[in-house]
Amino acid sequence: MVDVDLLARRLDDAARDRRTIAKLTDDTSLDVPTAYAVQRAGIERRRVRGERPAGVKMGFTSRAKMAQMGVDDVIWGLLTDAMLAESSVDVSRLVHPRIEPEIAYLIGREVRSVTDVETAVTGVAVGFEVLDSRYRDFSFTLPDVIADNASAARFGFGAWHPPRDVSNVGLLLEIDGRVAQTGSSAAILGDPARSLRAAARLALAAGLTLEPGWIVLAGSATVAVPLPKDAHVRVTAAGLGSVEVTT
Ligand code: OOG
Image 1: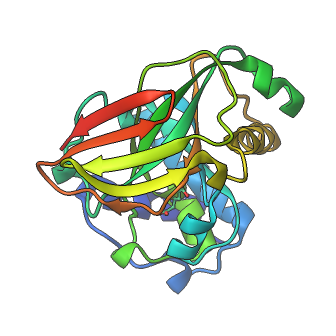
Image 2: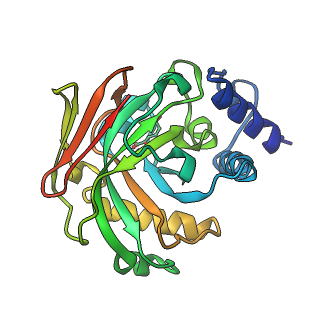
């Protein structure tokens, strides 16, 4: 029997102590459903500390990311209010942070079915996600990264715009005025709206509903790049403006 709470504690302690650990699968045989149980137990620990759920993040929704991490299935994780970075990210609290450009959706009302999700969206924005794997060298298998809440660490987004077609918008990630990555939202499952529907489907299957005020991060269109200290980052999406963050 896998001790789900023990594994969740290993990951949670590593994040709080800012250190990496060996992959859980090095000494435990972990399947995908059990890995999600570990993820949920980790979120529960955060909830007990007073963090509140703030949305859902999708992962490995683009080929670039799948190839970067050697993993080939869409995954998801939960965002909490403590992960929201308004204008700065304190990288000294993270181990080996990386940043990636994203499309963010704002959920306006409870989503009770997958077909319901697009009409429940009240805003779309350019966003970013800061990843920080709790595993040594950012190296993991699919169950490991699921258990680790899909490497979620921090996230942010720009101004909300009325819902619109974002199936092919140009994305630009700049660090200190230099282009770090460029891509198209079309890299996200062909259309980030597919990722949004997948988020609703996965949440419902796990007995969760997307709630009003929740954010859905559709996943990166590009590889993630190291997020250095004392950096100024700008992510721009054509027609959606920019979001900036300093470290
Ligand atoms: C896992 C998270 C992947 C994305 O956008 O594909 C992800 C990782 O790469 O550490 O969030």
